[in-house]
Length: 598
Image (cartoon, rainbow, N blue to C red; front, side, top):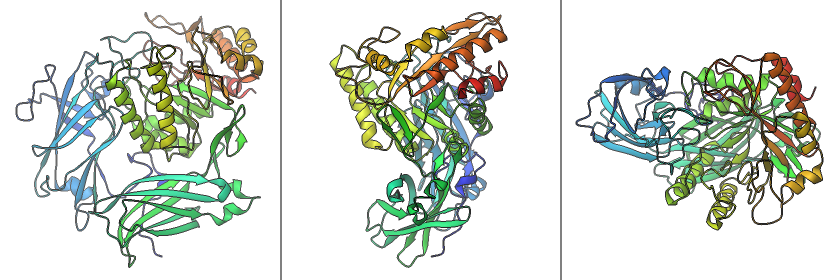
């Protein structure tokens, strides 16, 4: 068949907000918006006075926003207009007359009006949402968008992660993020369109499955066609009839992958992160195209066997770094250039993986991880309380985040809970232990292709990987503590280095044991209030301490991988390998040699 022209999603510049479902025409609404605070939460779309200008998508707490106000901000409002020029850039016209307004993330409760009509409401500060403007906008005039975001600073039942509930940052918590902090953009689609893709690879059968989710009225004679290619060579094609169903699965078999002596040539792995180009077309029975998008996938499988983590059925030692992904000028938000550079820096330091901590990162970061070969432990922000609202918030938002990101080959593990945040009495409250088990099992139900860490650090319930947090500063003690596999596994049945029970509710199952937070060496500065888990007096002392700790972890025979704390200085937390501006504290090659054990 003949495929309509679609973007090659494997070679993006990192600007497009949704990298695994790409249309050629779209329009960013980032940039200047009118802005107002509403501390009493008493405003309305009719009465609100917009007296400031903000640079979207940077949160008002950040310098890049132009507001730079870090005080408590419970409610903010945004307003801007768009008209014929923006709609034309987004592809409006002909059969593409449905206009979608996309929000990457708005923290925390968002309401959106267009031309005085409520078009969307969304709860959850990390997950995307979309407003369908069909029948609301007027393509012949300027259309007014108004957004209200409510984010109560001391509401501990919402997913806050590292956002401080106090007015000023302290310890390991940072300035809050309020309102819009990921891209806002317009897209025009036909009345029946491709809404979501989920990719899965099955290496043993040389197969690829893609679930194609549609939006709009699906007729009985509607078909989905898919083509996979690499370096211009077609690898597989498939076409299925939807039979009126909203979601259809297309099964493709890549013939060259059946050749057991060469099938590894196309696999995705850190040292060779192959991405396969995908073209997905929605068409009528006579092959007339209705909609078409570009996508990509990586052929890879992750798993565990005994005490090993496996990538493509081969043991892989995870050498990871904890990444807060927080920037001085933009806070939790980031520019496209910063997202790419963060991945590059992690790889330059010698790590093959990263754990983005207490944050669901922008999909454009995951695109660069996919393309450049960085494995990711996908985490979410946690609440601080255990109640019905907190339970509902994590179940709802985590489900949306897993769906959004599960096709990225770089993601190799899921982390729904960290250090018993939101389940502070897990060890002695059966309800909290049940929730830990249930959120881990929910994750497996949503995506059964990756290991799940039930509660990173301690108090595990049903983990596929058993993780330990240990900020012991003496590398000799660290090396001895994790040298013997039997002794380390015995630790998992009792109390760990910080006095917390390591497992709850039964014997420790087989599975890899990893040291997933350690290090935390601060290079002392003249700035008051900075800290780390241990301190170095000068760059030479810092180099020696960090190198020794990394070598101790790398050489420890009782663990299958590690995650060093942390990549960069973040606010008052100065235990990064890099300063907050991303310059290295010591020569990069020294860190790289220690990370790689060379």
